[in-house]
Length: 155
Image (cartoon, rainbow, N blue to C red; front, side, top):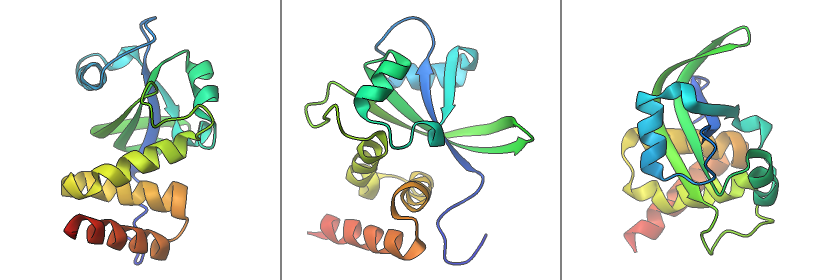
């Protein structure tokens, strides 16, 4: 791995939606479907929706919830091979703290910050990668964020 980075190239992030005609699913339904019925899952590279507002994502996917899949994957040409589901980050758009004009990347950022100190090492590595790749754009800024989150937890 490169020095001074949390960005792991093998970590891929996808917005996922269970493609069954329903507008609403639980986190358990996402987890079950990803493990047992992956063909019913619509996967959109996170880069394709990064920066869109909640209103835009809801309209694009015709949904009232959304999940961010973090996985270990590699690509050969345009074909992505998913090796394992590592984490599913779930957001219910009916949450009163989420506004229609919030951007999707900020919503997941807040959720990850809230869950960081209670997560296992694998999830934390993936969250650090997300923070550096999509939010902070630098190792040093992500490092400062992590230190801040750890200090908040000690209080």
